Length: 288
Image (cartoon, rainbow, N blue to C red; front, side, top):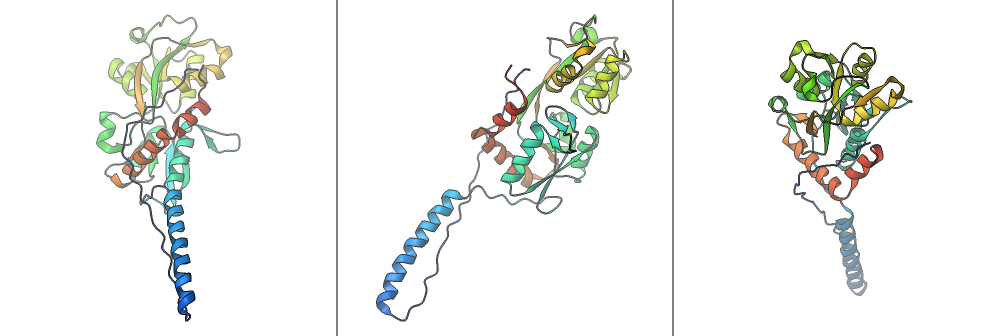
């Protein structure tokens, strides 16, 4: 599987360090009072130093629900987000959001939605962030704001082994399966028109139609494409070597919520600098 390299835009992070100070205790004995004040001053200085070195950045953000960072996603986009056997969630975006919430001093609340619904929810302020391998586009920027890039992806084409489709130029006149609301759908609609595009609620649905001969190809991000083809290894599918499009992923927030956006960008910069982002990506995507 191709390794995904995290791309982060540099941002300056402001640290707010709070100093502690101790109150001197009153004493009726002048000699002992002098000694006690000296010891307390030394203790106060030590406590202040320890507090300054241990405290991390302080963020003041308002969220949809107090104490929670609510994330809406589409948990059918491996390895970015997917469901577990016990009904939970896992993936690159899940771990990224969980770590962001932790560094913001919040708990994470994740809800599974259709991709296009997740985008509408963040636009309407029904959640704090949307993460689902979301690409920044001019149309989306009209209705929502985006964080700095945290990862990049490549749109690829899945076809049957015996397909006569060898590259993007061969998609003309074919029926192309896509995930509804994604940039794959946008690209194909722009280039080939509605009659050539078959939208689906998720990538698996599109691939199942490809297996059943209902579409001629599927356009989807490389990472989930690898997962989907591997999960259907006996169905004679392949991913073309020629990429359809390159794109960057970012976190969507409600338009004008600069308070939350600035805090997320600061945390993303911290996670990139200390290696957390790459460690999360490496957890789900092999170097091979």
